[in-house]
Image (cartoon, rainbow, N blue to C red; front, side, top):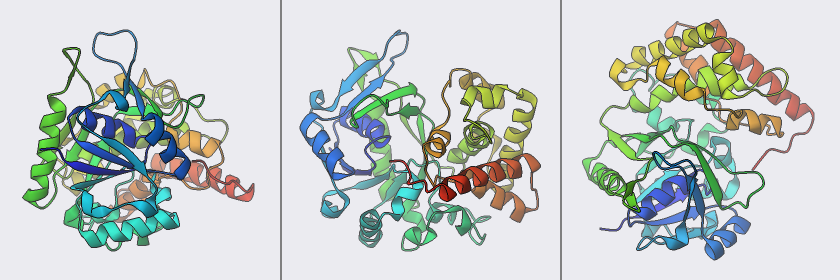
Length: 355
């Protein structure tokens, strides 16, 4: 049965959207008016490399049937149409007035929400007993965005696939650099998990010219599988932000591999203190190998460099958790201080933010 999925965010969200379209489901992307007009006219283009192929394939939404794609602005969403909501915007973008009003409506409609943000929504963290009563609001641009959501209706999908919008291309183009899988935790209600597992199976069955298409949706019963991304973010992504110019993820990780492993292991240990099983986590050696091919600064570092006064602050979230657990880490604290300093510089300079 074709499902109707609403995805907030037309850039990274177009990757999950394309996989759903290929699996025969219908997708609506929520974005700015200009981007919506472009997508409704030309569709989306996602470039992805299939296994054992030397070059990327361009997958155009207009060629995908029977799945249908459309794009709308936040104020024009009809929530009665949808079975599931995907949250694919950067966390600070949810403070935009029209987006926030849509979030109020989504919470009232009690629609299940699958986040593919690096920054876990606060209601999701409330599902983890060790975090339920912690003071974590400081890590969010505006924590009130999340206060109406029922925790059981919000789950987290680790956004492991690396993708970016090429700066020289139109807003409907996405290039996938590392085609790994989306790893989603289950919802509290089995009715919603049924939808999630249907999507998982349908995406898994997709082929292109008889070949398997990477970037799957994998569903796990554990709440802690997506938290494996925290170790990667604190070791690589946020350390791309330096007091000077941003560095690549590869350089952040491999510039001092021993220090990187110390950070990675400490964040893994924090997740285990919260309840994660070692099986939920990704070995450092596997991450370090993948980082060798990540030759650009992280999206967070690029956003800061372009003048954004706000970014997703998983670094600050992990710092707050580590301090409240009584296991602070000097390297993590140093990273947070560096990010704070760079963001404060942008505010002082009158940074207007990046799209």
